[in-house]
Image (cartoon, rainbow, N blue to C red):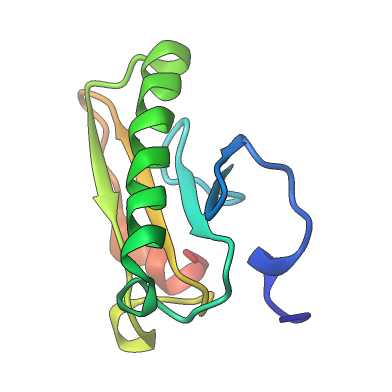
Length: 116
């Protein structure tokens, strides 16, 4: 899909055969990353079992990298499926959001603005 930002050649943090990870261009915290299916489908529920396994594999690998680089105190794993759920980019992806003690996230404001 030409107009899909996730279908363009963007710098990748890591990848496997069916998915890849990138840092969010508008992060809600240090290290906020996305794991994205290589095949263009609208949402997580459209993925094959192999694609969901590939995404989960990258989430685990990405957590190890973020632990090393940022030492967060916790994580949110987050999906928006459909426009009414806050999905902006209609290409299946999962957010991995590092959380830090004392950090307050204003998710509603972020969703209104520009979260993918």
